[in-house]
Length: 418
Image 1 (cartoon, rainbow, N blue to C red):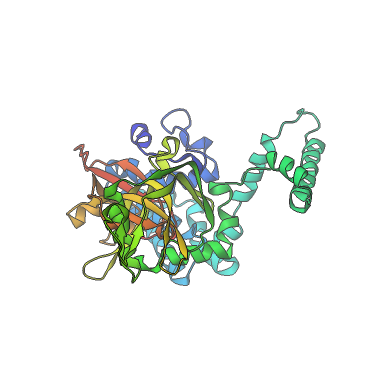
Image 2: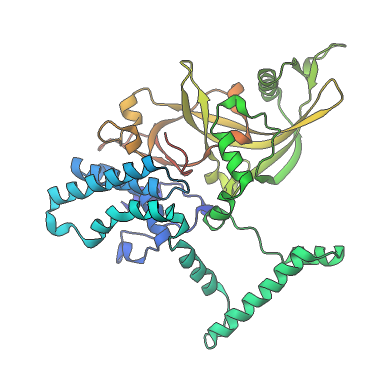
């Protein structure tokens, strides 16, 4: 089991990776946040092939309920589904293991949906914030003797620093204070603050619409990050960029290398500013250009199929870049884009949703895809606004066979449903 867990490429910005469960007391050292990570990410990939049919249903119902209840937004229909899954889970446990295994916690979990109806999403009253604050306070250096006064002194000093950082008019002092300014939180530490901002909510709504909804010129709640360099696109990628612009605008664009004389077309130059990372809200998205952040380079985006339906595809970002086009009216538009290689789906529908139960694809929080990529095409260039979220990649074996061409896709964005 531990070997399977080690195959899961877990990004560091998601928080602390669950400790080894195959040694010592195993789960006894898990924090609440580590339990959430284990259930939503690790549980199905590492245990599915070890379980029988009933145990698979128990696990699938529990994971689906947790995925719903940890959302930042909840609908009544979602709560009804979560309650039904938890109730069926309890019935299956009683059926297979007997009434004695129905612990008080299993009974109390049936009342979680009632609490959500009374007080809102669980994130508005759960205790993750208290656990996180205890961790922050415990990280402050102290003498181990007068802990409370020393912590209060640190908090007072931090409040003064924050005041001067926000109310300073002196350029010299501003520059000095910026050096010691606390770094903006990323990952789970800042998830709640960013999720409640209007700008982030607008970005989420934009990313959930069809692919032609964003041009790449719109604002987004984040910034492009280092490594940064000015470079030129190779001709084959420049051709894809020209095709991308021709599909967005009514004007006709041509690559700069094909210009032989005066014409009325808009010339697309190859010069770009290339970035290795991007921050959107609290999430850091990497690329293969930033080797230390390659585990965060796996993203999800939606594409319209030939039959008009919308499907979600996994891919790996090669790099992010800014590119400027100069229009005929002397104005310019700067686009924030990403170059992505998209994975090929498996051909068999049953293989793709191998971990589903009751023939319900929503019961499965992972999909199986091939490890092969599509060839580069116009769809390889997308606005950063179309990024739905990240996913975690790991190898997955069906039964006792070790099939390398399959990989498990585990979405991290709670608003995504395959």
